[in-house]
Length: 336
Image 1 (cartoon, rainbow, N blue to C red):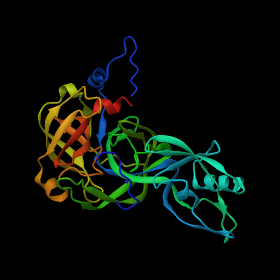
Image 2: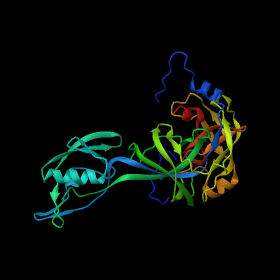
Image 3: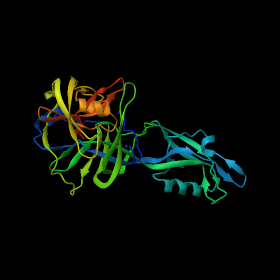
Image 4: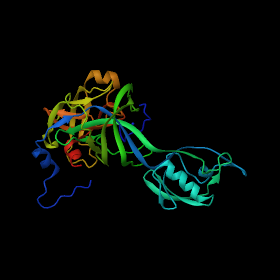
């Protein structure tokens, strides 16, 4: 799975330790709260953090045909965050900034692959509608699918994905206005050696939750009170120190909306891994291998259960062997 890949409705630490503060492992060991086991696939919509360029077009003016954006070197995947230092959050904001320019040169603040730069550009007036344009097609909202890992039984707080949330151009996403919807899996592109597979999902109208935080360990928020929790199993958590090499299970949804249990084996435990790759896992369940080839994009966040306790979540797939991948320790997600 790597970073969260974006799908359009089709198939999408700083740890402050003060004197006397318990470590994450100690917190996990002392945590007696009950958690609902996730495994359900959810659709996420998040702000692009500006307006992201998804294509270019020509602008026909009284003086001729122009391609301002392409001519100054803008690229597909660039995110326009500000115009003349004024923040851009939506397509409407960008259109308003173009009109304010009156055809005079403006400075765009552009984010590309995590780096920010300023680009000067002169909008031109469209002959057909009289609007000032720079010849781009943009989007301001992104959508993707992933798996819910856990829901705190008392607070309804959830954690999902288990890894950083970025678009396909490695731009980090903003949490403002993020929503989480029920998602039905309608197909699977099976993984193979050298090529990651993926779940194909369809957003349903039911809003499951609201997200309020993204970090290097996933996406977090609160489930709606109206959600029916009666069909979910509950579990307590265990720190990485209690995980052992050997059998475990994951909960994943690869068809429809209902999670299923699948057998895996934990091949390695690494509590101190700084990239949150705390487990190496191998899918041993032939049903899952037959349907998906192993671990595929969209399964990020699938809860890992061992000895009846929640110990982590699936995060990445090995490209050279889709039956193998990484997992994050649940204590690292609960730190958020």
